[in-house]
Amino acid sequence: MSVLPTPVSPDINAPSQLASHNVRTSFTSRIKKAGEVVLHHAKRHTGVGIVCAVAYFDPGNWGVDLQAGSQYGYRLLFVVLLAGIFAVFLQVLASRLGCVTGLDLASHCRLLLHSRPKHTLLYRWLGLYPLYILSEVAIIATDLAELLGSAIALCMLFPKLQLWHGVLITAFDVFLLLAFGDPLRGRPVRMFEFLIAGLVLAVLICMSIIIAKVDVNWAKAFEGYIPSKYIFSSGALYTSVGILGATVMPHSLFLGSALATQDRISVSPASSKKALSLESRVESKTSSESDVINATIELKSRPQRILHRLKESLYTPFRVPPASAYATRATRHIDRENNSYIFVKAHIYHGIVDVVTSLLGFAVLINSFILILASAVFFYGSGSHGVATPASLFDAYDLIRDVVGQAAATLFAIALLAAGQSSSIIATVAGQAVSEGFLQWRVSPAMRRIITRLIAMIPSMVVAIAVGRSGIDSLLVASQVVLSIVLPFIVFPLVYCTSSKAVMSVRRPRSPSDTNASPGTPGQVENGDGDEMVDFSSGKVATVIGGAICLVVIAANLYVIVNLARGAE
Image 1 (spheres, rainbow, N blue to C red):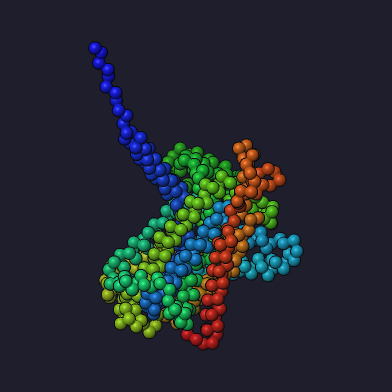
Image 2 (image 1 turned 120 degrees about the vertical axis):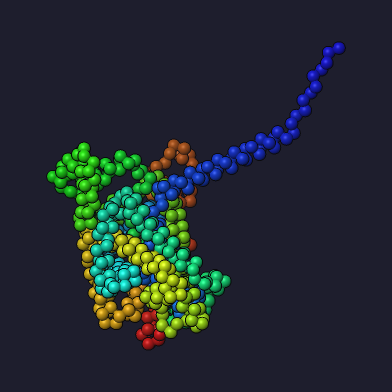
């Protein structure tokens, strides 16, 4: 009698086990892909946001934040947060504008106003040139704050120095720092970005250590981020406008849009970088000079190559740079074409993430630390009634030294110096972008620095000699109010350009698979060549928000000006 094999019962759990395995595999692949995206972002796209964030905690911010914290406690932290959100929104618009169009904001202003078909001279003399002058005023007001902040920091670190000694020393700082390369060329200068990032980290680390040593009531501090009607008192509103002007910096919008035009994807390996660096130098020289460079680079001796590169780095700040990669001879938007669709898709979202994380993670945090420090040491340290006069940078240094210790006071001075130095570099580079974009006027970084610094030195030296330390701090706050007044004139063309489909549309060639696709896809319009025009302009909501920011700044400025005219404090 044959024995039948025992039937094998089907594994009921097999489908669930297979599904569980697929889920784990899918989750692992997603984590791996996310890690690759983060690594790619950190390697290629990190830098512009940190460079732009420097403008939002320059010494002008320090002066205004110290005044706000010493006189009003934690109550104006909401204004710091609101100004930071405004800054993030506007900086993202500037980044989108540069990435999509391949032009910076200053160049767009020239295309809008320089060659209008009707009333050409009227648009130039009543639109373009006054806007350029206002932009230069913003650069000078910014540089004034950096000059004063850096000079004060040097006097704190070296007490035997006079204030005018510090001013003279800081007049020559950027010449050496800009020797790392011109940040406005077509490819990112990583050494320049690393330098700025190092200074930013120095500021953040120093302020974090100081805050850890100060007795802060964190419950009251977080309550300060809640809106309060206290802000609308005349004195608090004036300081709030100063915070807004100190935080949302016009020159950072110009610089951010210029740096967003750079190709951060197709950066060559190390060997190719040398060739590209050589090529960029050759373009800025005559043919005879090019032969000399080629002959020098071909030298076999390593010391000779190092010496040549050092010499080139020292000469760079004193040379008139070649036209920027984004520069254009077009006189109207219709005469040029935007970046390719592939370029925009590869850069735009990484740029937005970089800007948002840098401004919220560095700028807003550092500004909050400064105001919290002033509140804890001055406002609550004097019996919760504030001080009779706003705290100055020197007052903050002296009180931190007496209450917390000399080490914390030294860290405070180092952080202020790092903020001033990094902001000085950014202001110089932004000034180059402004002059080249508006007028197509190229000038060497050294000459640009000398002109801007000499103009800023005049009022600072006069006030320092005539009034003293108190006048210096008042001048710091006044410079930030000037920036707030200039801001709407810069924001309006930015909002206008980013909301225009004609300006923000990118050509995308249609693939064969798209031939039978139904038309009318949102953001895509077919042109006469059969290509798709992909619209990257801001939506209605973003446009309304941009307009609202303009109106808020204008209303606050008018309120302050009227009250000052009436003699109100």
